[in-house]
Image (cartoon, rainbow, N blue to C red; front, side, top):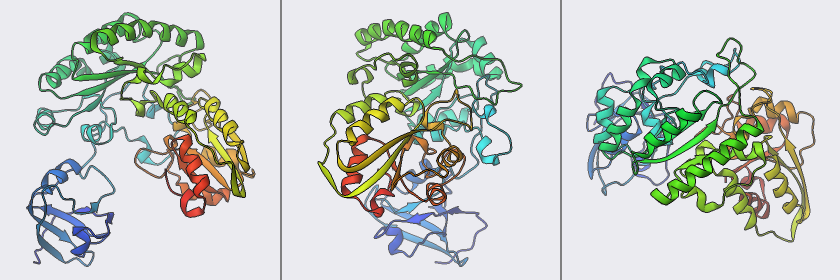
Length: 447
């Protein structure tokens, strides 16, 4: 059926083979206009609208022709449509002016998209990105509760109303305890984070924050403490200091008392420290049981523990069929872990392994995590170097949900400029699987 409308439509980025949409002739580049005459505003809406057994799908083809397909299917059966974005309307941006905002610490002159401060509750539910809740209206809170958008990931930073307003440069930030209470009362679960700043939101304020959040258990599922990240582009910004080794050691010792208490009372560690604290001090990582179900991996909490556990289970082939040379690249923080992996891999005959620790010139040397290394940093560091056959990079180095680095450079672009195949991996066993399998068609995949 052909029906003309003025709707803008949502671009379809791909269609799964042998799917309902493919059978109907829907293709990449077509536009989704409506489902049962309703326009989805995000992937959450879309999922609800396509769940039924009988739906009417309104599509505009690349030719401009519009069709409404009446579809009968199994309940919750997928149509096979994919979209470039999970949010189809304007992204909700941050209204805060945080003293420690990382976006404000980026160099000037980059693409505008890199300066967008996402604070969208929909992406918090869909992707696990952290939100401050300062831009939520009553309708959005109602939607969260009615549609059970749980869990959410919330940047708390402190529960003290005055300090939170100061930290976030927003008078509306003071309502955080009322907002969290509403979520808990309606059984919406959430994970919290505190970006910890020495002498600002630690000490008494941090004790108060933990005590407040524990009251919302079991709907408050976890709390991560993350050391403030400071770049070399802080000119004109509020003067802050990062953690030194001794300060980080005191944080670990202090946290252990809380963690012991919480495990006894809640049966969960609840309070977790980012891996950076342990790397900075050289203190041993907690054992696997400490991290429960690893609720805050995206925050850099427990990644190294998973890495070392995976490394301990590594099964190596005696030899490769053909000689191969590889480069393992990492940031400063994970250099010790990657060197231990390299030592194990060097036991494989016909395999040459080198480790490259890439300094962060984009943000500055105080930023040491691999997840903030840019494509331009990699290109600058590796230009004119012999990287062998494959350059291995950690998955954390890519922007969330994309095959590009933080500065927008793609994997293929980097590989082309360096003249090497690039493999993105997340675990030591991924590296071994790829080496054993071999072949360009394998190592260009993400594992």
